[in-house]
Image 1 (spheres, rainbow, N blue to C red):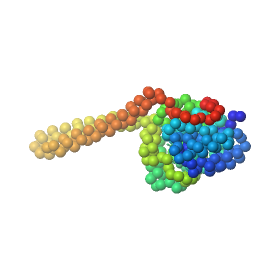
Image 2: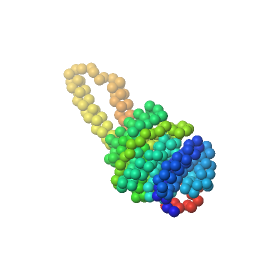
Image 3: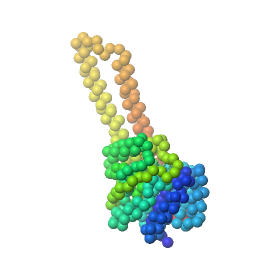
Image 4: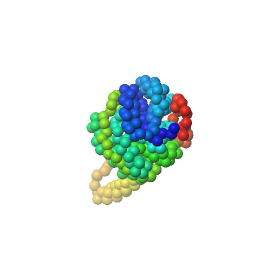
Length: 313
Ligand code: UDP
Ligand code: MG
């Protein structure tokens, strides 16, 4: 039977949370009174999560395991979950129970009203560091300002997507993915539902600063040319400053002033321009590296073990 709902949870070393996740999802989804499935994507775990997922799938056929050959990252794991999903509505949750499963019922309610993207907005975040909250908040505001896509503030990947939207996103095979941006870009009828983000159920975050920075860079390069244009602006600004300084120096020489003699001024001007040029090259590099990755056209992920029915839609 085709399920009405698919719940997707990406799993990267979450053994301690998995049983509780399964228990809570069963409780909430059974209360919806309709058929559902849980797609657990194992993103190269090394702590026994893989075996746990296999066991769950063996005892409950509603659990569909997708096991990656290695760690491909959270956004790719969610993408694989979407590729394997069969439900009419697809809900993405974190495996660490930071997205409380009971909120899913509210998302479903909005879907029933006809909305095709129902994203959960973090009205409150508990148990997270000051650094994480501030950096996340700044990041969402920056993205909102510099992209042409209306990416809603303070939303994560916790959201419900209609089958139509999932199919559209399935056609977007870009490698460096920022799913929130992609689902906003797709359009459709969208609405937010506020919720309180819970602390992690167990274990520690799998998103260290490095991964957060990569996600931020993917979001910016994927949805904005502003960084590339900054180089142009800086070029115009430094050209204007240099013309001004030439005029100032000529006037000073003619009036007999000794100012601006010597190497210090030359040195600082050269260093400044060198810095601007290297930064611009780096920005170009970020885009070119991404173009290179796209051109290679490798698959987004490698599945070493899929669900037994193998219906990869
Ligand atoms: N995750 C993943 N692959 C990764 C990193 C994280 O599948 O490379 C999963 C992780 O298991 C969790 C979700 O993505 O279910 C969110 O990660 P986490 O809770 O560590 O991020 P945070 O909530 O701290 O931002
Ligand atoms: Mg988390």
